[in-house]
Figure (tube, rainbow, N blue to C red):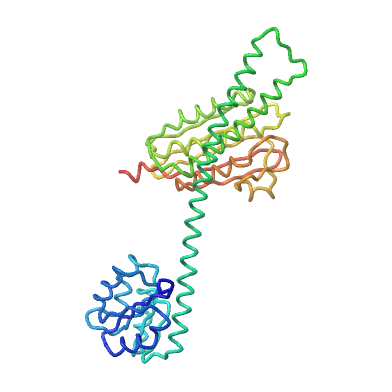
Length: 365
């Protein structure tokens, strides 16, 4: 039972106060005493206490100074300051530097101190439980993310195998598909694969450390366009890159951002648009790069603009397939690299995104 009792360290340079405290509270608590801050530190090296009570006016080191010394290495024990003085400066100092729970005047009242100790232990227990729950949630979240990432990778292999079989069947002149079932299967595979890739992007963005390297926006944007232009060959891409100074940034996350935004600009074109366009411009300055991506597609309803960066949000004003996490990943990736994004859209006319990304080349010089 002793190990389950509240453990208290009481520090006071007056021996009769230590004896009185032990005599009054030893039946209720597990008591440790010290007659100086230095002796108190020695006790704390060997004993894990829940509550520390210290006298303010001690030679060499005051109670506030002692609490300030130990708050980084021992943040968990609850601190109670005792003093026979009512100096306001001491009180302010104790709160600001020592992170005390309570300030009690000497001579202390047994019932008041008893109540204060019990309240302090309730806070200690609540904080400990909260910390344990946070650690448990972090572990569960990490395991879940790893499971999702692993599963996503494993799912892509059979999907690609099915895609390969479909391609082989088309080469086989003996097979016919008058109802177009193969095409339907292929569309479903493409959608599922796109969703899986988004999950992998989300995982990598949340886990990978930032890694800065030199980026040529002409090459990067052209690579992104090549990835998606086959989805709608009638789109005219207008690219303007003004990069007269070097730019350094996180290549993976900037690629993810551009790929998602260009993919959306292609996907959400109006089916009856005679001249679909996607305009991309980049201006690189010593401290930042500003990127604009504009399309003349279906646009976004004004009441939906505040929600488009939320996970799994999909506007109901279009019938286009989508995972609902692309723009969420864009926002998260920008948050990781210290960037910002703004959007302006008119329903039926098109959408423009403006991105600002810090140029890490400036910080390295």
